[in-house]
Length: 148
Image (cartoon, rainbow, N blue to C red):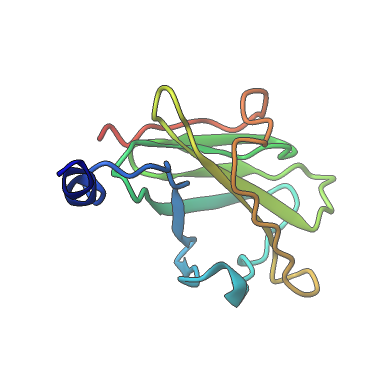
């Protein structure tokens, strides 16, 4: 009887908190499987604002916070609209941008990180990191909560 009760509740109460998913970034669709690679981001211009728009989801329906750890310059990001602007420094010549998503589950948050290259750089590089290992509390990016 207990086994039947646990089996019936498994879909409602997952035993593992899955990390949030990045669905789209700047209109570019993310692959549904991590081993399929990922798109590059549109080219940036040093000293010019770079618009950021993300679409996220969470398997359990938790709220999602968005971080840009290690970004040079300032990021003004509207968490509710999931969009904002990265103020690219005049002297920036970097190769990538990291996006870190963390759900808002109080006792067991889960997170995932994606690092993108830009169209004006060579090749795409990808580092998935499931877990809450990114230094997301001290970055210059803004955070947001989906309010779910």
